[in-house]
Amino acid sequence: MANDLPPKKNAKDYVRDDKAKAFWLTSLYVGNVSGSFSDDVRRTFIINLFSSVGVIFTLPLGVAALFEEEYVLGFCLLMVALLYTANHVYLRRTHNHVLSGKFVIYPLYILMIFLIYSGGVKGTGHVWIYCVPAVALFLQGLKRGLIELALFTLALIIVLYFTNNHFADFGYDPALKSRILFSLMVVIFLSAIYEYCMSRFNHELKATSIELECLAYMDTLTALLNRRGIMQRLEKSTYQSFHLLLADVDFFKRVNDEYGHDAGDYALKELSRMIQQSLPEKGLAARWGGEEFLLAVCDCTKSDAFDLAELIRQEIEDHEFVYLDHKFRMTLSVGVATMNESTPLHDAITLADDRLYSAKRAGRNQVRAR
Ligand SMILES: Nc1nc2c(ncn2[C@@H]2O[C@H](COP(=O)(O)OP(=O)(O)OP(=O)(O)O)[C@@H](O)[C@H]2O)c(=O)[nH]1
Image 1 (tube, rainbow, N blue to C red):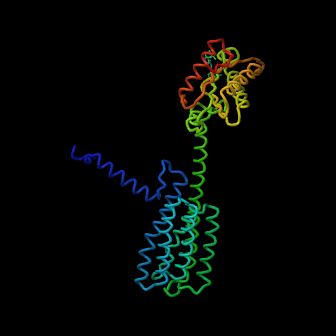
Image 2 (image 1 turned 180 degrees about the vertical axis):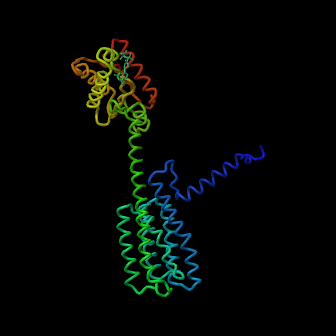
Image 3 (image 1 turned 135 degrees about the vertical axis):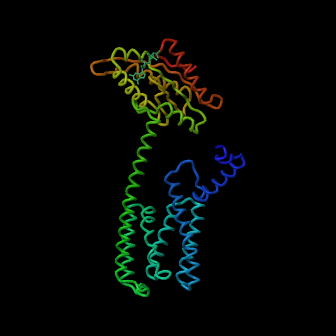
C-alpha cells in the first residue's frame, strides 16, 4: 500500500511549486494578485484571459492566412494579435480593466464584421461570431452589452444583405445568411440570461457580504460599533495619540431585576443614543461589553477628554429613563486614559479599565483620569 502513495515532497519542491504558482498567478492576474477575488481582480483576470485567447487564435490564423495568400485578412488578424498583446502589457502596467476591456471588444466587433464580409479563410469567417455575445455582455454589462449587440446584429444584416460581400463566392445556400442571424440571436438571448443571473447573484452576494460585515463590526442592539469594530478602527488609526473613555453603567443589574430585561435593553439603546449625540465629530463610540461603552476622541487635550466624560456622566445622571409606565435613573462610572507613543493601545485600554474600577470603588457616578 505504501508504494501507492505519491512521492514525498521536500522543501525544495514546495519552493519550486510556489514559484510556479506565483508565476502563473502573476501572468494571469497581470500582477494584480491580492488576497481576495474582488470584482476588480476578477475583471482584470478575465480581460487578460480574453486578450490572451485572442492572441492565441488570431496569431496562428493570421500567419495561416498569409500562407494562403489572403493578405488583407492575414494583416487584419496579425494587427488584432498585436493589439491584444499590447493590451496585455497595458493591463499589466495600469490594471485599468475598464479601458482594457474596450480594447478587447471594439476590435472584436470590427474583426467579426470583416470576417463576415470577406468570408475569412475558405469561407469559414462566420463560425467565429458566436464568441461575441458572451464577451460583449461580460465587458459592457447587460444593458449596454445588449444595445451594442443589437447594433452589431444590425451591422451584420447590412453586410450580409446590402453589400457586395464574398458570401456567394463560396457556393453557400442563401438560407445560410438568415440561419447565421437567427442562431446569433439565440446565442445572444442565452448569454443575456446567463449574464442577468450572474449579475443578480453577484449583487445579492455583495449585499449579503455588506450585511455580514455590518453584523461583524456593529452591535445589533445599540447600532454602535462592537468591540471588534472599534478595535479594528483604533488599530488602523493613523493618529499618534487619542483618549479613551471607558464607561460602565452603575448597578445596571438592578434595572433588569426591577423593570425587566426589555427595560434594560431600552435603557442601553437610550444611553447609546445620548453618548453618540455628545460625541465630537471625529470620535468613536462602541458597546464594549454588556453595559460597558468605549469612546475614543482625538484632536483634544486630556483635560478636554475628561470634560467630555464628565459632561456625558452629568447628562445621564440628569436624564429620566421612561419605559412603559416605569421611570428610573441611572449613573455612569468612567475611566479615562491616553494612547500615545509611550502607552500603546492595549496598555491604554487596561489603564482606562483600572481607572474605571477605581471610580467604582470610590463610590461610582464619577470620572477618573488618574
Ligand atoms: N437588558 C440587558 N441586560 C444586559 C445586557 N448585557 C448585559 N446585561 C446585564 O448587565 C448586568 C451587569 O451586571 P453587573 O456586571 O453585576 O454590573 P452592575 O449591576 O452594573 O454593577 P456595577 O458594574 O458593579 O456597578 C447583568 O445583569 C447582565 O445581565 C443586555 O444586552 N441587555
